[in-house]
Image (cartoon, rainbow, N blue to C red; front, side):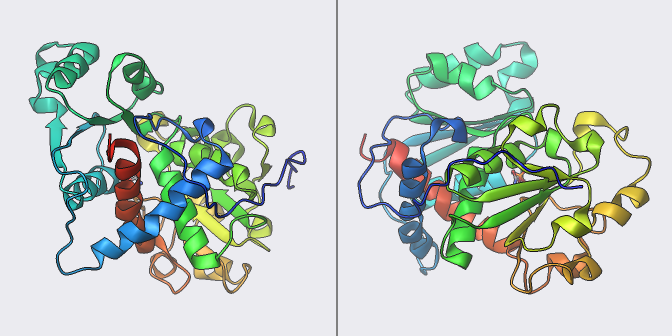
Length: 325
Ligand code: CP
């Protein structure tokens, strides 16, 4: 059964002309950004994407700026793409390995951040397993804080790169229908995307076993169901999520086989979807669990385009927040 969301306001903003000033601002969550601001960020991405297509992928835009990557959880895409983004803009990017920092000797997160700020850094990019850590740091650090994922709460730059990818492929966001499938309750990607997609006028559905739907889902403004086959029909975008076993163990479903039989996006299931549906995944993927290899690598998949766009989107974000300050 598909449970319908209550009607919500549909915004028609896909592109804006006005310049909005993001300088010095934190990027903590999609909750904090209006549709016009999201559109303004997306409008900035294309020029940075072009830089990554050049032989010499470097411009002097952020020369003299220092950006710190402080990751308390593993990351391949987000950490690396922020580092590449900063370096392509000529910023000095410092990666702090938590295991080799003085936090392993008992120094607190606040003291660590204060010491980094005392070195006159220009932006702190932080990922942490606990929701709210970037917000806590932003309250007392003088330089902007960018949330690279806080627990199950938000992953705003992932949502922005996802929106950019959808708009690049489909031309518009308003009125498009997205289905997000998998471990919704544990997913900061789902949460940020739901907030951002709805602000941009998209209709969002989520699909998961009942044990993977968050408490209070009926208040999120999305349709929700556990019937993947039915939910796949008529959507423009299907976004698959991995099971976050590191957050809850294996207690939410009887077996991986049972989960996959109901929630893996296979070629057979793809035949129920529109022929031009976009297949997305934020990564990391568990092939054969939530997505079949032939679908992950198939014509409808834009998974690696999401990664390519992640660099350009993060270049745009760094430029907008610390460029010209
Ligand atoms: N999408 C994403 O956040 O991937 P990483 O965990 O590799 O950064």
